Image (cartoon, rainbow, N blue to C red; front, side, top):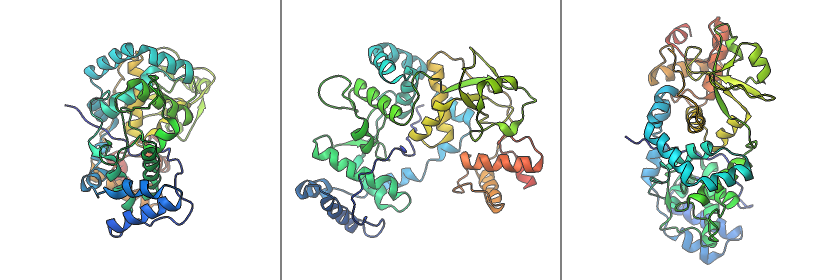
Length: 392
């Protein structure tokens, strides 16, 4: 069974927003589209092109439904990673690593990014290009820009798509992709394509939907622009001592790798990297899997904002590079979605910023949990349990 995980939204949203007053979200959709068209013309786009571009736009209810039903992110790390990572995906990834070896060699030489990193994104985003989404991209982008939930993320992408259209690289009627407007094998938004699109196969065009060299080189360039440090690690499974100060774990704390080693942290396979800072992350608490997150791990959050997705993608990249399957351990029983919402409400009532009450164990909720565990004298491993819920 294949599970499609579409990105929440790529964080790199370049500014294609016109300089004059922005069209407000909401209201009648047709009026919103007309206002966006006027805004595009006022910002310098050709009137005839803008008219053609916006002429066929329709609101897409399926896009809104997809945007509001990302329940898969409520899964814990073990369940989520096991649902995405299969022997078949690993084998196909290794086959593609060989098939496109010259492309990955170029990426390694030019950007210093391991092939496993790009292969993992390629696998999770579109199953190595097999499932790229059938949403009309323009309809999705304008629908989400009109919707007042996150219009600031999607408005720039509408105008970026118009720029691509004027270049002959986007079709309002035929360009399709994911529900959130991403296009191609590694799912890039229009603004990202403009900034980071690469003609990897040398045919003079950037074809992210049909050319693996174009898609992989473009994805690599984007990661580089997001801050990827060449030829450095990103994630490593570790063994942590039971005596570790759990309050030091989590992405908010970074220590030198040598200091972690002094505290008893060991690599499960291979050796710890030298000369870098890192964070110890325990996605399911002190009794579950443990990882050392190096600086490059944080770049993943510029691609996708879900902690569970990011960790799974980063871990899968290590598997494709030859790392063994993680040691699951025996984590304490977690909370149901309903219980997580109850916990978030109680944390919020105590003054913690947990973001939206959505039942998802995100970064803000983890930080709040760890602070309350410290206050209550519990092991501060940021893992929510029924015992914590009852104490609150």
